[in-house]
Amino acid sequence: MCDALNEELLPDDYYALGEQWAGNRVPDVLALRERGGRGLPEQPDGRGPATAVRDRPKTTYVVETATEAYLRKKNKVVVRHVSDDRIIALVEIISPGNKAGRNAFRDLIAKVDELIRAQVNVMLIDLLPRTRQDPRGIHAAVWETVTDDRVTVPRQPPLTLASYETGDVTRGYYEPVAVGQPLPEMPLFLDHGWHVPVPLEATYMAAYRTVPLRWRRVIEGRRR
Image (cartoon, rainbow, N blue to C red; front, side, top):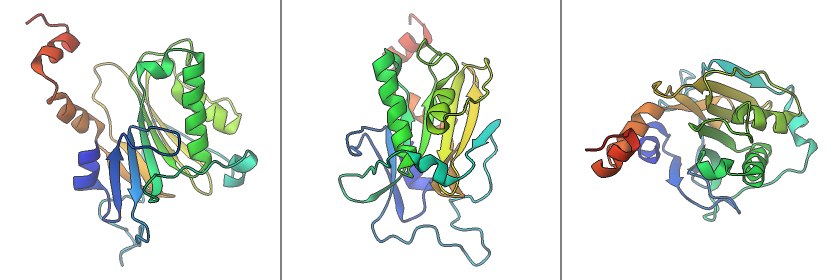
């Protein structure tokens, strides 16, 4: 995913790093902007940089808060990268450890809540079965923590892709997926109204091809 973001998707002033510290958090992927970088200036035709999209993303479910001020009722937590370059977005791939117990899951949801309130855009990739910690899925747990409002989510399919856009309002883009279903593109937001579409299926398959054959057989349930 980092390779795809850096080689093809992110504008020149942005870059992605994997497994970097962000305050006291360790995300899977960070998207950062160079200090003093130009950000996302519009082209003469108003489209913006070729790799960033201003159109509203299309996912099965979209939710949003009434106003940005509503999200600031609690104390704002500022998250910074050790290089002092500004964090723009974060990708979190949910692991079994995140759902191993109540405390671990609460820590995960608290981290996402802090990041959203600190105006960091977040993408969550949860391809694990629901557990007692998230019986309605991780998107419901995140959104209801951020807004204190109950959100409707389907029972099936059970796996979750979600992306959260911060700004004047906070929007959540939610796509439920099933085991064996190709992963759709998901928006990773760089600024309010601007995102890059991340090709999750292509990046997953590219990573999977580097897994040794011995372990691919284990994953796929093959003996030889």
